[in-house]
Amino acid sequence: MTLDLTAELAATRLLAVIRGTDTAAAIATGTALLAAGVRVVEVALTTPGALDAIAAIRATAPAGSLVGAGTVLTPAAVADVAAAGAQFVVTPAVVDSIPEAVRRGLPVTAGALTPTEAYAAVRAGASVVKLFPASVGGPAYLKALRDPFPDIPFVAVGGVGLAELPGYLAAGAIAVGVGGPLVGDAASGGDLGALRERARAYVAATS
Image 1 (cartoon, one colour):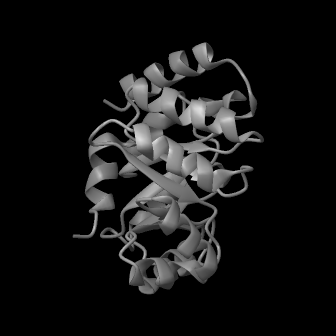
Image 2 (image 1 turned 180 degrees about the vertical axis):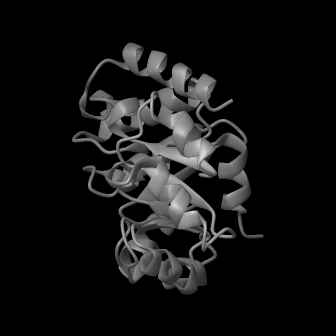
C-alpha cells in the first residue's frame, strides 16, 4: 500500500530537512528531531553518508514517523534511497527521479517555483509540490500560485523561520519544510540541545 504522504504532511504540517557535513551528526540530528516530536524528516543526499543515515534513522524511528530522502535527482538515486529504506522522495526541481520513484511506489514531493513547473511536477506524478525557494515570493506568492491550482498540495520550503511559518500556513500550504532555521549546524556536529529546543518550538507552532 502506497503511503499517503499528502495526508501525513497535512496532519503534521512540518517537514524537517537534514543537510549536513557529517554522517554521524546527521544520524544524531534525525534521532533528536524525532524524539522531540517531529514526525517527518528528510536527509538530503548531499550529506556525506546520507544513505547510511537514512537507514540508521529509520531503524530507531518511533512508530508513525516518516524518514525520506531529499535532493534525489536521478533514477539511480531512487534505487539507492529505496534500498536504504527511504519512505518518500524529495526533489529540488522537476527531474528524472520523479517517474522512477512513482513506479517504485515511493511518494514524491517535487520542487517547483513557477506555475508551469508546479503543473509539470504533478503531471510527472508528484504527490506534493514543494514551493522552492519559498522565500523568493513569500506567502503572497504562494496564495497567488494556489488560485489557479487549488487542488495541488503545496509545501513551502526555503527560508521558513518561526516568524514566517504562520503566513505560509495561512496562505494554504499543507505544511512547511524547514532546514537551516530548524536544524542549524546540528547535522555538521553542532549543539543537539539547541536543536531540541528549536524542534519543540516548531512542533508547537505547527500543532
